[in-house]
Length: 222
Image (cartoon, helix red, strand yellow):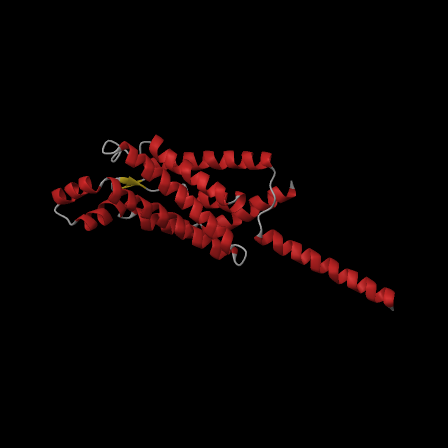
């Protein structure tokens, strides 16, 4: 009888252990070696840069629609919060190198560089923090939250940069257009860009979850 109980107990422990391990795999990022991390981040860096370069073709008003936010979320989810910050920085660098901040650069080069790099880096950092905090409870909510945070922080920090570095010039532009400053900023600078970027991220949420799951599984099997 004792042998039967012992065998049954071992079986339950084995099943419980497998179940716990499976649950952990679904919520916790796999341990990734340095070589795999560098290769993966190299690929994600290239994707972010290329997508942002391609976004130069898609223009609404004076600004471009950002396509690089989704891979920033994926990178943060797979490789950690620091990866989200790095990919956000790359996104900002791509904006500068592709001339997508040309309207502001002649006005204040330092202010333009600081605004573009900070808004991208913070967007990636905060999206990564949010995803990794919520993912343990619900991976879908984690992706949706990160998808909301990324364009909100990106646009919000752009506005902060406008107020700090370019307010005098923007006030002149608004006066020339016969509009109040805030109305000019919201209509002229944000326009349809922000809601479209937000909708793209939300629409891609399910796809992003699938990609994250696939990449984590592939890495775990190596």
